[in-house]
Length: 251
Ligand SMILES: Nc1ncnc2c1ncn2[C@@H]1O[C@H](COP(=O)(O)OP(=O)(O)OP(=O)(O)O)[C@@H](O)[C@H]1O
Image 1 (spheres, rainbow, N blue to C red):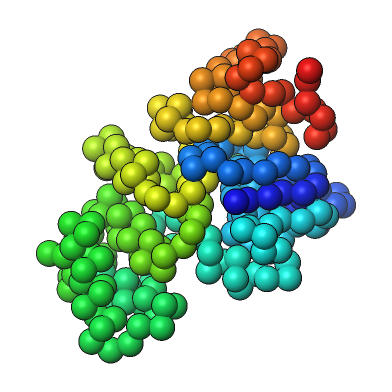
Image 2 (image 1 turned 60 degrees about the vertical axis):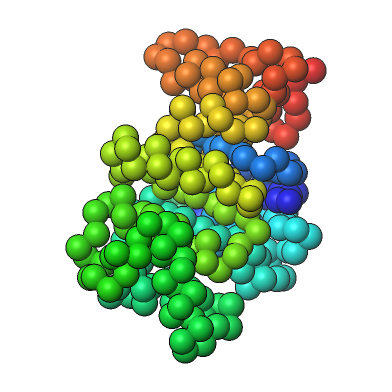
């Protein structure tokens, strides 16, 4: 379970303190939560808050009851993070070594760790590439490897920040299908509205605040209206979500 309690993120800028995420309060218990919104709206900031990569300037973030400020290491162990560019995540020369490195976190050593890494690669149909250079992998294979490496650490929650943005349609579908089948709670930041439509709950972020929170279809409709030139965004159906204004919601 993810809880944000008046959590905001501010950064220093040449013109003074800049709020990049306004105070946000919400509890996310749904298995599949998507976050959509324009470029630069604050989606990644929200995602980074959830796994402790960013700390709230005000308020609190708790994951399964653990405070990201006081228990940062425990939160990061619990929340796996997948980036859009797998190159920023893969650090070892071969897939086998990369997954084996992730497994160090679980305390596995030597032969046991190598065997487990091979099993994990096989699970993701990457076993035939176990010992090749990671530079030889396609973009899709790299993203799959990054995902395998994160899931190897057995996180209880997975945060994916636009994991399919750099992938072709076939790989995008493959990665989305894998995410959909996971037992973990998944917070999926995406520009892929088809994927967002499959979520149990969708947050729309705009100009540093969550402006809509509700069912997938209502949230996507809200986002489309927000993005349409010179069209005022309209509220979702009352039972399908809520428009959020400064932490309060419309009746
Ligand atoms: N450390 C920082 N200093 C100054 N501005 C920042 C900092 N981090 C983020 N920002 C700004 O905050 C805004 C939100 O960034 P964020 O990466 O969360 O957006 P996003 O919705 O994920 O965008 P995209 O879809 O393009 O990835 C952007 O305008 C970004 O430039």
